Amino acid sequence: MIQVQPVNGKKDQKAFTMFPWKIYEGDKHWVAPLIMDFKTIFSPKHPFYEYGTMQHFLARRKGEVVGRITAITNGLHEEHQEKDTAFVGFFECINDQDVANALFDAAFDHLRKKGKYKRVYGTANPSISYDYGLLIDGFDDAPRIMMTYNPKYYVDLVNGYGFRKLKNLFAYRLDVDKAINHPKLSRINELVRKRYNVSLRPLNLKKLAEDVKIIQHIYTRAWEKNWGDVPMTDSEFKELAKAFKPLADPNLIQFAYINNEPVAIIVAMPDWYEVLKSMNGRLFPFNFLKLLTQKKSHTWSRVILLGTLPEYRNKGLDGLLCYEALKHAKERGIKYAEGSWILEDNVMMNRAMQNFFGEVYKTYGIFEKAL
Image 1: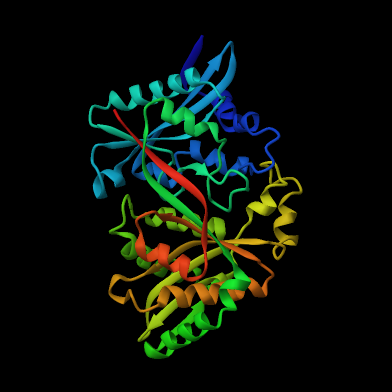
Image 2: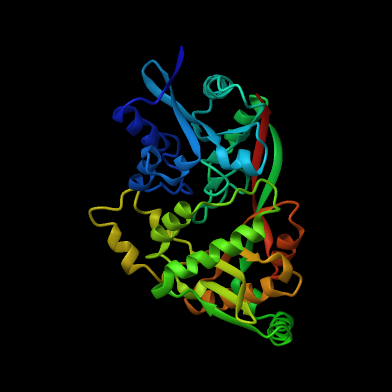
């Protein structure tokens, strides 16, 4: 018999947090999340709780934990997108459709009782601004920083409950040498710089608060018309800036200016998952030293944000920023870059990755089911 109950108390919280270690035991591609970071999900100080709710559930059979899930509501999504859509996330489950069905039933029943939702999207951990989507293709490689990873059978479990795929999200693989050594791209980017009198500068860690505000402004304006977009709050941006400050390479985060106005950004990060992979979720007592000693030992980077103010689009600024960031990536020995994630119907962003000879090497799915 399968029992699904809300997470209640520290013992349940620990069981919820640690359950993935059971699912991914022996999986060479999985990157364990930092336990100390994951615990913030249970803290009322987490920025998501300013506008959303999360109810966590655990599934047990004969007293053993066999799955987990979270029912999620998102007030910002309701304000900027569909008012009648809720979410499920943090889904982990043994390969058993009955267990998966019991988890989804519990989450759906919780959301149905609120009386305002007609559909559920998944998976969101906990929203589009965090880890988003279910991996559906590209299982032969580890995830890059802040990207999801899951067993292939999760797709069957989700489909088996009656979800349908709503959107594909693409991850592109870029060969850094191939991208920056192509003479045509170099000439085009130099023409863009001269034609529009563009100046570039890296992130200024001494004025981080000011630069974060610029990133937030451009990010909000650049993505506001995208499917599913929800603007991040001031608290979320501050929290992310705090978390990534010790990990950032300022040269991989570039700002484009025209007439002394910041009009476009690229935010790329070294793939710190390459380092975290060996930590097994624990930063202390000694693993934190790896963050200091392995700062320049990355093979991969990830382009997380690439955005241009709407009135400055179609000027080649995205290509110019990509070229500059990839050039600095090469200088620190990085061989590959992932551009992710990109909506399947975002023509401009897909074209930007293809212009740098990027190839889709992973696909993630957003799934939908009527409530």
